[in-house]
Image (cartoon, rainbow, N blue to C red):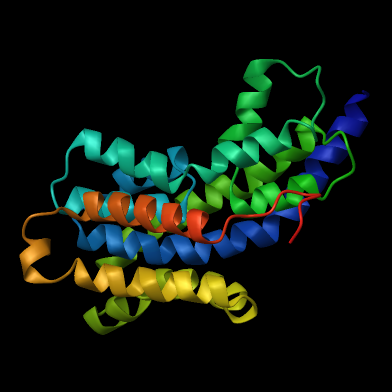
Length: 240
């Protein structure tokens, strides 16, 4: 592949990733405010977002840090929340060149998020590694910078504005859930059960004995397992 072609693919990846990066910046700014309220410094937040590209994972991690959770609790929590990225990475292997070395595959896999995965699999096979790196360059820095600036400006902005912006991250999660829940009553049922279960875990007789990280692990595993048993996904070719 010629240098000019590699440059073109890299630049196209950056262009495609720019709208995603802008969205990441807005979300991570809100995450940074939450980090600030948990006592995380701007440098710590910057490094955390550079190395951990997942909004749900980082939000859960901040909760565990704030509550003084253990490293084991943190590891299990992140593995459960981010397990979908293992599946995405496995699915992506058929879309990229089989000649790529493991280190190069690892670089592509490092920036697998829901939006990046969708952008990659929408490309013509095989997906160029240079396109993937262009996506990473225009998204990871925006996510990390938004987090750091959120922590910094969390100290400058008024309390009312900080409190308002800190809700934005949770609003994003709601925006992700509502559209599919409106289309499928099964998803709506799971969402309602999840909300009720989360509420139960906030009651004094449970919240005083179970940390936030363990609550997330228990709820994620139990509710997803029950949903898989009650409403199993039909394999292609099976009777509906």
